[in-house]
Image (cartoon, rainbow, N blue to C red; front, side, top):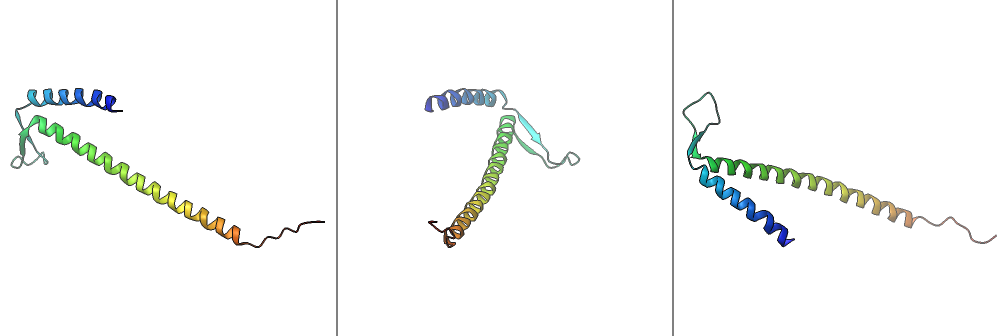
Length: 99
């Protein structure tokens, strides 16, 4: 597992460093296309990295919320099964033995 992680992380880090060095010029990022006064001025590589970071955070939050919802349903189902088994075990036996 560590070897695969190393084989993935090192090339990604090299590509990221190359991207950062090649894209050092400043760009203006505007939230409102009709207003020209307010803009964030930053190097292009920061804008790209922040975009990736935002995507990772949104994706992680989505996965976490989906897992918690499924876990809640799984716990409720387990509780229902346990209750049904306890009720079945508490019933008196109606079987008679012998002829």
